[in-house]
Image (tube, rainbow, N blue to C red; front, side):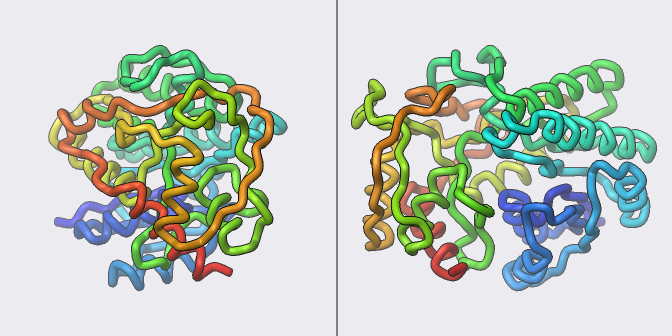
Length: 334
């Protein structure tokens, strides 16, 4: 019998790619999304890619009754939870909004799941829970500390899940800590299209290449790195999507609460990424250096070995594929 998976935030960037992989794996999918940073046209595009249309509920995780109704109506077996706000800068300006959406919204989801005895959850966390004090490669055992309300909201939810599991070990929970998601589906039909000035490197680079923005601001060129720019672990969004499918299968076989890094285990500097993008697309990316941003670290990349040992998951797509797929998507979203 097919499993039914509720995907909160399933019309968003990472959520939509994960929905595609779930459908391709033969699962029934219900997308639950308030469309605050996405579009209902994504559902049609998911159908074009996968050949299957997911169920769609326009709903908000701040509405517990709406969650409860969806869990009941579709006889949901498990939940993948992406829904939440995700801008570090915005979280500093509006911390209460972030705590309400990301923490209270998750509590609503957990309460609804508990009422219906739906106790399988994959949670979208972030490498921001490691703060700025860890030396790469960063393993799951690294100390957790945060420097902004967005990261703190993720850490608070992780701690809530740990308390929940201690109180009731019948829960099956996987916490996934992403490093730097980039790229798009190779079809060019879905990808990252942030509103306003992008917070992340790849859409910023792509929007400069297509002429939407004049130049890329590179924050800091005096770090102790190969070329003075910051080094991060960039991971293709389709590798991330496959990580969620692997996590779901893992907790199905081995009930537990487990946290996994999702990254490549390789660091790439900002200038190296710009160069790779130019080579993959043939487009020049104009850039200017700016001062370092407060809280940014020189280097950060994952130790993803635990995910491979436990789940059999490993990132496989190259930086060149990340760039080519991101450009294919961006060049169709003028």
